[in-house]
Image (cartoon, rainbow, N blue to C red):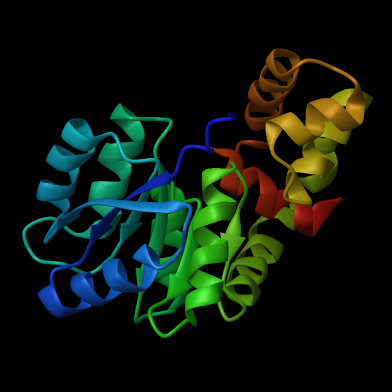
Length: 216
């Protein structure tokens, strides 16, 4: 008898107890989700990531003791395989950019419907970028303002295969999907991505995806 697929392990981080409980309850309805823990601030989230090894951290950004942006940066530095999905009541551009720079793989508002939240968790778990409908325009506006002048010189640094990889990243493909589409190994895809990030000056896959969506 075939074994059932492993559930996505989720850590919920928010300084408000009722919000944490509400999010955990909503997500626990999904058959493929496992809520492994809850944290009330960024410092506690880092300890629980180390203890519980979640796949996805649902991270509030504005919290006392240690805010979500700082916590995200620390989590991504120590646990590179853990994905962070920012969930907040605020969609101002500065906060969004800070979160992206810290390494979030997605950004949603807290009033997003459950099906959208569930889709976002699955997307970032698969290695894709997920931005809510009100978030993406703000990011694209910033990318447009800051990257236009550098676009041509950056693209010139890429080989044709690296450009293909970058384009597929921008379309939301995971490493496995890119490998299948280009008939190469996932290891080769990772090598290409490393060179792509260096060439365009992106810190991580999220920044590369945003850059690709705007420039190629």
